[in-house]
Image (tube, rainbow, N blue to C red; front, side, top):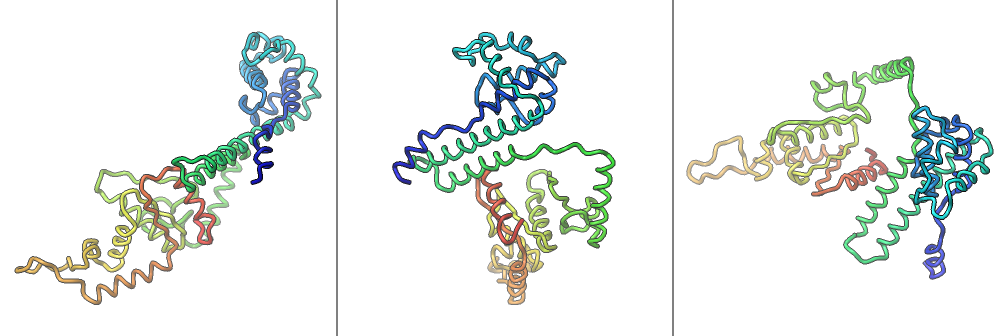
Length: 335
């Protein structure tokens, strides 16, 4: 970037829409019905002018208490507030009333206030990223990318529309249509297969957006079962990402190969036969037979057709794991 570009960025004003803030608050103070129109859009922190956010907060508190929010009832709550600066409460409230143009466009004003707030958050995220890029420190490039992606994901969640309420009739209709789709698939499952028939029968499959927790004491086989589900689900056609904080990819691969070749995991680790006793004299075990090596190779070839990625990055953060999952979801394999 040129010196001129750096200079321009350094003095670029933060996005704000003071006129929309004043018009919105003026509408609320004149007619509290305006607040009911925007209560699901705005929060006090969305206002660029701090005293405006404070007035919105007071209005919300009064309305929720079934008290009319007007200049007369709001003024005692903001008199002497440090956010007023050099202005008096009367001057600020008077300016808001003069900016009032009616309640018809209240939601438009609220949307403009929220949009400016989102732009400020985006500006902050990008500025912090630029600062990290230009400042020597411990943060690596990948750490900076993960941080920016997390910030942008949080912004995207903030932009999401509020989910509307759903009537009981509509929810039953949606369930019925989902059941018809599941029936038409011919698998008897409402979601992806666990790979274990008993679990499929009990649950109807792995349902989209659901979270399942495997709980048991240590050394009871939680990782093995989880990886078995991942492998079998991939074999059923799903694209799977499996993260393991305990076992490396080779250890998980050994378990998968052992299951395919009907060998003990120890045999795959050592290349020795554990289906036969040790030699009496040497105490050693026989190497795997040729047919057992061929079975392992057959398992390797079968795994080539599965969309299963293993992530064994240790000490990973939730943000980084989410970032890796999002990258896989964007790839050709999907997730």
